[in-house]
Length: 116
Image (cartoon, rainbow, N blue to C red; front, side, top):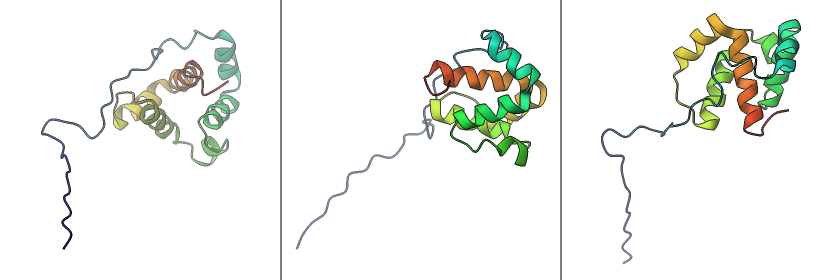
């Protein structure tokens, strides 16, 4: 008869599901750090949003077919880079500061080498 021993460690109380320790590299109001990108976003925000979604690996048409999808993109970026935050805050940030939030996402991907 064969004996199978299984050793598994369970999370200890107080531990979270995932340890998110990082912060965004650029603040929400640092949207003017790349003036060319800021001008592009200001004069053609739909085109800029499509570019950001494409850089994040999503369909470029997502902002058109799902107009309220930007907070989900921010959450995806936070998850991918292990950035602290909460979903409800992502929605509020995009509701009040959508332009700056989209530039923040774009800058984050560029600083981490995942975008143009």
